[in-house]
Image (cartoon, rainbow, N blue to C red; front, top):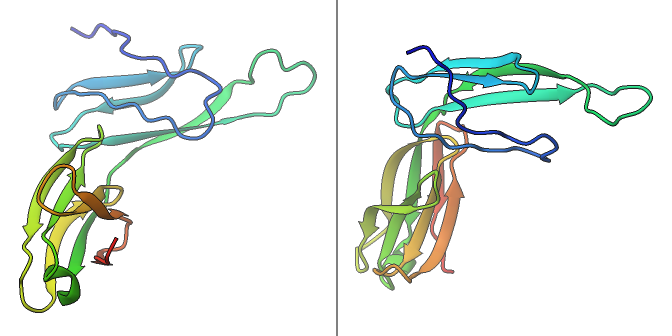
Length: 168
């Protein structure tokens, strides 16, 4: 329809990064505006499962009274996660003791199981998993939901990352 509808407001004065997650559909157009109405970002959603849009603002230092913040200078660009490969190594001294489960931590904090490393496999086991920079993976020891966390790894932008699972 071409009519803007406000979905959320990010409050001024937040320290550090603020993350807003918004479900959308490919082709939807999003506009991020400064409080004065200035357009900071215009973005059209693609068919990718996860899309990130970075809005960086830098407040100027004003002189005199600072009862209201100085206008923000904005630089914005879509941020695309980098595809990477994780190699989870499960050494023989560990895999004879217990089963381990590879869990992806979704962007809303829910663990989703991707693989199981069975106890009793002879030798080192290496599981290769394709993912994106910024994704978080959790290795749990045991086969149930209450099993202990052996390892948490957040993928970096390195093209291949070796992650060795050690005893908790």
